[in-house]
Length: 299
Image 1 (tube, rainbow, N blue to C red):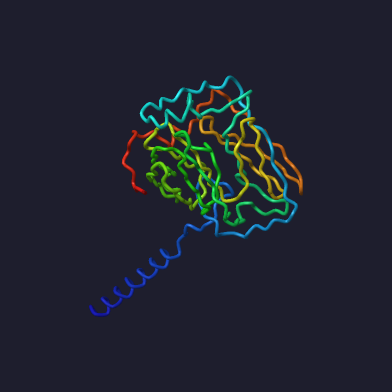
Image 2 (spheres, rainbow, N blue to C red; image 1 turned 135 degrees about the horizontal axis):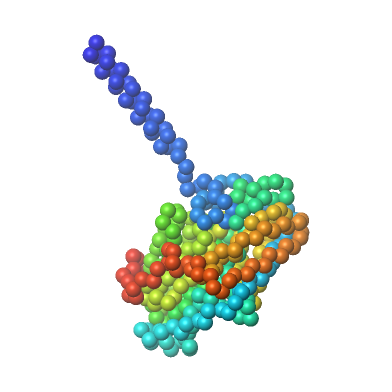
């Protein structure tokens, strides 16, 4: 009797272990689909690959600011003579406004449905072969805000005669890796990729704490950054109805609904209140002490 019971318990234990292993192996992977723009989530391999039909349209608009723009603050670059020599009268870039128009807002299609009833989130998109360049010039990141697709190459260059530490700070749990690398003056480019969609990844320099940039990682190519006159243009958007978001590092987000007809053009304007304080700096981006020791050193 004892032998029978022992055999029964052993068989049950093996069955439970096999079931647990089966569930563990069948869990979600990093290739699960995310929403079209999504703050974080899936990669680009899932879903039906989008193929252009020739009926795509365009979303254009302007980003404005209600009220007086906060005055930019002078940056003290005296800690690095090379920075001070190359940058004349440097000012902060948190709010770049002129004549009531706001630059450096990141505008993207967040979600929506195409004219034939398909969700934009259900499509996958080819990874662009072109690199996106983030330069360091005058101890500033240029451009201040950029967009990129998952797995697309980000090439970080250094046009300064001084060294920098490029430190990307994705949100914890986003699926994107934090990285921090030293790049001496005259060194070759650093090439990186982001695996998952994320709005937006802060980038800073540990050597020069005033240096900041933001990288919008978007599953699809339907995004833009507002220019000095506040204007933006998103091309190649399939006919349909979408939620479009304008994001700004200080003022937060604004959303709008747009309908695009086949080969049509839709206009979506956004206006931020100058008294808003939804600053990205209160979230994942924190200014760290200068001369922080980097994770990886490149020569």
